[in-house]
Length: 492
Image (cartoon, rainbow, N blue to C red; front, side, top):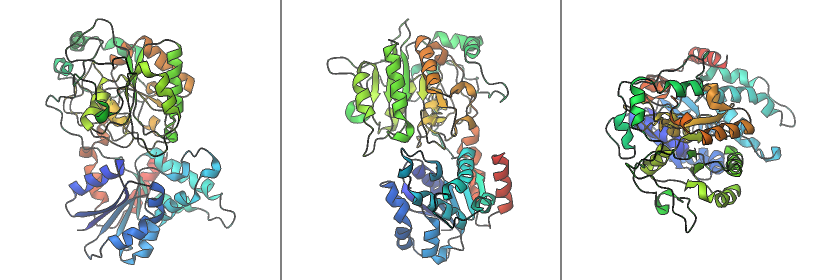
């Protein structure tokens, strides 16, 4: 085995990347630790892998994420020092949004800087991730009391490059049970075309033009109320809380049922339940919509961990009559079923480097043809349209990519990685802008249901990125000149 894959936090997108690489490179071997107690993994994983990884003369390349302190591992295992060492950043700790400045643990960011210094190639999953890390090194090191090193960013930058997170999506060209029957009525010759950066799509104009030609005929088959792909609500034991208070029926959309009145706007929030995703902003916005007596439904998805912010329990009670689904959905089919019902996917994240969950949401008035969504959680959402042909879908860390892949209209902060992927029409700058956009959509849900999403996703697919990863994991010496050029071009 020539490729040594090491992952100290084998879960979420970290697991998906290791699994994809191991399945694609038959001369690879993986050593991992379960995705538990992240802080302890970052502190102690090197010592574990020192003993767990057997010595072998066949190793040529070492690939690991930035959770591992690579400097410690190489010092503990000198036989690994001569390998081509690739460090992959899913996220960086230098700009993690701690609630209080004194809570920031210097060790985690310091470990990542040390790992960069001993790595041969440093790979980031987005330009935002790379640029925010490099530009924060000097400020981060100012927390040291004295004898601060200088120019470390200049030593690290030539090694850096951006290689997007790859997605290998399942083939859904055949009818799939999780998709509404409406997909059968859509024309098969429509394809997604991206707008020029100078001419971002206009929401109202796009909605108007979507009624032309064969798309107009397809829309006649699509009532405002979308059918349930399963015909049943997800049972709580399989898919979390259905949302209806005791004594009130849970919302349901049986297949084939049609109404002339449009269904309420269905809003989905697919993040893990932690403070860096700013659930308070999202839930407070929903409560403002409720105060305005606007018609909407909400599904709050994502994983929960030991410490769940109190705002979830409080909002759950106040929003009881608006809830479609509340809680983590362990079943992939049930999870995509929820996404395929949603109209809008919202991100309120304060910490996001590659939003996979947002980009998989679907649109009802169009279909993709031979398009593959990217690996951002929010981008996966944009591409997963129930009418899609030739699309693939895979669940990733941020859950956004799957939401957009399923056709949802994304609303994201005009910050972090999102402007790297989305036009301004999908971005908001302030909490008030988020509220006003949702207010309009609640009153006129057809604006999002008829909108043609303008996102170029093919560059994030495994088919597009495979050769770049094969070159990256080749056993030849790393090309610092190429890496420097890549870093320079991405940093401009």
